[in-house]
Structure formats: C-alpha cells, structure tokens
Image (tube, rainbow, N blue to C red; front, side, top):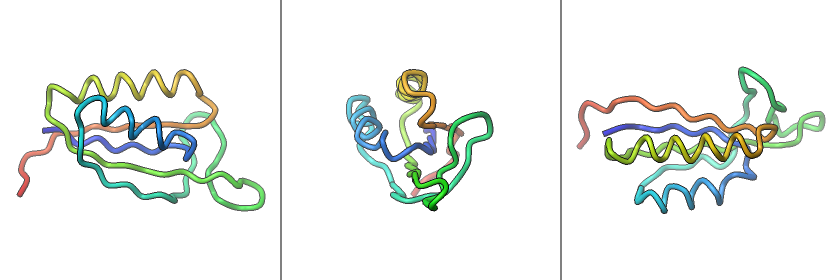
Length: 97
C-alpha cells in the first residue's frame, strides 16, 4: 500500500477528487485551507492581502498497482497549469489497522 500526499492550489480540488475516483481510490482526507510556498516556482499561497490564494491538501492510501496511475495523472494536471502549483509525494505504508 502507498500513501500519496497532494498539496495543490484550491482551483485543482474538483479535478483531483475526480482523478482519485476514476482511479478507484475511494478514501482520502482533505484539508481545505493550508498555507505554503512551493520549492521551485509559482505563487505563494498565504491567504493574505499580498498573496490571496490558498492551497489545499489531500492524503490518500492506495493499492500499489494504482499508485503510479494516480501520480501520472496528477503530473499531467500540473504540467497543464504549472502556475497554480501542485505537488504529490508518495511513500510506502508498512502497516494499517
């Protein structure tokens, strides 16, 4: 099983949830308002007067055979709108209850 943490501009919310659904990844936890700044490019997401946009984040746990497809679709989404900001991180889950 893999964990995928996704941090993204709120404009991506619907597309990301649709992507998870179309990859048969039902479960996820979402934080609707998170603040942050990417490591490469893009605008900061501070929810302030100077930087008004906000980010969201989702964590999902998926079967190994679905993980690469999810990451590939997210990567394509990011390439289509690089100024918005979307990052995803994946790691192995050893145990669950």
